[in-house]
Image (cartoon, helix red, strand yellow):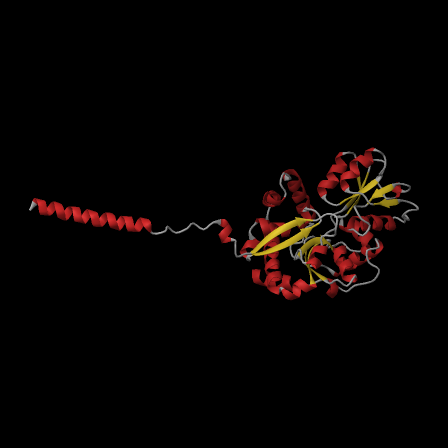
Length: 349
C-alpha cells in the first residue's frame, strides 16, 4: 500500500511539473513601449523663423500633450536662410509660425495661405533709445535705428511707422537699417546705433540694462493707436497653405482643437506655470521664459481666443505697405480662415 501511495504521489507531482512547464513556455505578453503607443500618430511639421515666446499657445499645445490627444506627433523646425513659410509650398512642412506681414506677402504673390489663429493681440515690440540722450523720436534725428533682419519684416515696418509718425523722413532725417538683434549691443557700444527695435520683452530688458531708454512701448494702447491706428495688432500667427487646408481639413481641425485648449489653459495659468511648461522647448531659458511670461500677463499680449480684429488687420496692411512688403490691398477673407478656430471653441464649450 505504501509503495502504491508513493507511486501515486510521484505521478501527481510529475503532472504538476508538466503543467508548470507548459505555462512557462507560453510567450509572455509583450510590454507596449512609448514608441509603439505613438506609432499611429499622424506626423506634422511646423516651421518657425526662431523659437519665440509669442507663439506660446502652439508650443504649449505640444508640451501639455494636446497635440498627442488629437492623434498628432508634431516636430518644430527653426528655419534660417529662407522664409519658414516656403516649406509650406514645397511640402516639407504643413504649418508655419510667422508674422502677419508674411501672410500678406504670400497672398499678394498668389501663393495662397491662410492664417488659422493669431497668438498675440498687442504689439509686443518696443523702440529703445541707445542711451539717455535718446528718449524721444525727435532725438533720433540724424541717427541710425536698427529694424530687424530684413526690410519686409515686422520690426522694420514698426521702425518706419515710428519715424513717419514723428515726421522723420527715412534716409534724410534718420537711417533705418537692417541688423540682427544679436549685434545691437556691440553697435550701440561703438556709437553706431542711436536706437533699435526690440521684438520681445527679454530683448528690451537687455538694452535697458545697458542704459537704453524706451521711446515707444508697443503695448501702450494709446501710444500704439496713435502710431499705427489700432490698439490691437495680431502680429504672431499660425498659418497653412490653401492647398494643404483644402486636402486635409481633419488634420487642420485637430491642430486648432489643440491650440484652443492651450489658449484656454494659458489664460488661467500663472507665469510660473507657463514658463515651466514651455521649458521643454526652450532648454536653458528659465529666466527668460519667466520674465516674458510675467511681462505678458501684465500687458495682455497673448491672444486667448486666436481671433483677429478688423483694425489690427488694416494696420497690418498699412505697415506692410510702408515697409515695401506689399503694394496693394488684400481682403480679410483672402488672409484668414477662422472657421476651424470656431469649431475648436464649439468643441471646448
